[in-house]
Image (tube, rainbow, N blue to C red; front, top):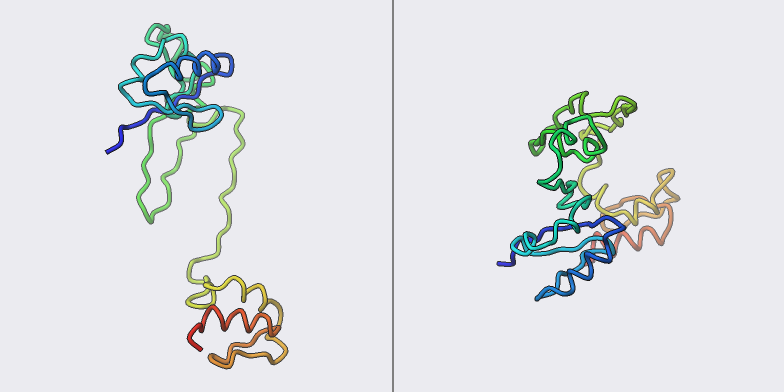
Length: 172
C-alpha cells in the first residue's frame, strides 16, 4: 500500500528554497503541480520550519508551534477564509447539505440565492436522455417525416436518424 502523502504549497517567496530542499531528499520529494509538492508523512517532520511558515499544507495554512496563539484567534485574519477555525460539516448522501452558520461568512459577504432546479420527476427517462447526439439532431418540431425504422422515433434529419440507429440499435 502506498504511503499517505502530505501536499505542501510553499509561499511564492520560499518555493525555490523548498524545491532545493525537496530534491536533496532521498528519495526526492515529488511535485504535484507547478506550486505543490507531495511527500510521505514521515518526511514532513524533517522539513525545516522556516520553509513551512505561511505554506498551505493539505489545504490548511501551516501554523508554526512558535507562533503566538493570541494572533490566531477566530476573526483575526485571513485564516477564517481558509476554514481553519470553522467546524467541519458533514453531509449525508442523498440529502441536501446542512446550512452553513451565518458566522462562517465574513461581514461583507453577499449571500447567493440557491439555483432553481427542475424537479427530478421532470427529467427525461430511458433513451430520451441517453443519447446527446440525437438530442442535438432532434431539436425543434417533431421532424420532417424521417423516422427510425426500428422504433419509429421521429427525427429532423436523416443524419440524426442514422446516428440514433448506430447508437441505439447497433444490432439492426
